[in-house]
Length: 455
Image 1 (cartoon, helix red, strand yellow):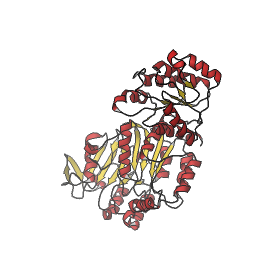
Image 2 (cartoon, one colour):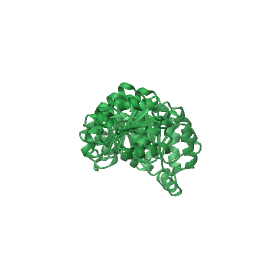
Image 3 (cartoon, helix red, strand yellow):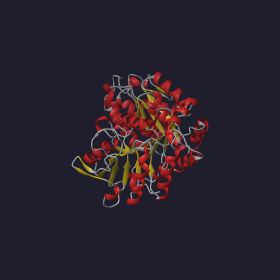
Image 4 (cartoon, helix red, strand yellow):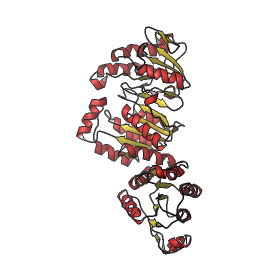
């Protein structure tokens, strides 16, 4: 099926708008697109009328010309007739917001929708979903704008079976400064599911990384998903629920999905180079780093720090995650030391981690990053930047970013995410350098790059 109309609509019809209830999901969708987005929006209600000075059509059949996307938000028992009219009028794609289908035991009703849409070769998202959001283009999420925190336009596409997880993740992306290309709630995924979207987004020029929250799969669907992720040239990140027996039961009651055998699924992801996020926080960080460095790394890391304790913690985390920390040779240690300020030369440790100590200045960190990049021994540098070191300035993160870009080596950073240190974080982020608020998080991002290249 061609999904272009679903993600690039010029004409959107909202079926089910109310003339008396502004809080109806259809009204929220109609209103936000009418006022905020560059699409032609049409409201449909069997009684007709006027809403926000706009003519409301009694049927989608009355709208002149083909509609690219119809959003259906009516009672479950009325969806079938609405969909039939959409097909009759030549609608190119649909999103069914309405619930009351397989998740409540009405598999028969859902199967009818699927058969109708498939016969018409019309993409259908849902039912029982939140909708689709594309920054600066349109928004079918039935949540009021004043309650939403939306990320800016970027290169991450996020697919979620859960509308709530989708919204939480968009809030997290916004807080981390991560932009998205498409945000898609698929709900019961009756017709269009993860595999269809993976195949479409693999060729989407607006998308660089594809992230998914997955609850479960139907028969053979999990295998097809892993194969599609393997075939995709772009990084794929998965957050999976239903890992336990209790979680599987919760998943089944939520969207009627089958959680399946998590351990086998986890092994398949690893085997095919798909990156798994353990938590929602990890998902955002992994999307960030894979967007910055989609090619991945072999896993030979130089750790540079101003604290021996931080270096030791990073070493443990790197070892646990299969990353290697090759040591500098004795000659290289002397060469590096000679480039540093006199106070650091005699007290620094130049093995790996490279500890420049609390006496280091901006230039010491700059020289260390540049030297390690030029040895050819490392394919990634992990910078543990401690903003409270007396001799450094708030310009350091921007200077280190410039060195990494010039030397063409991936740089990742740990900086405590406190308001007082925001300038250090922003100095990295504004230059496209991923930053984690914990050492463990920075190491996990580094390990994700290694798993990416293991494909």
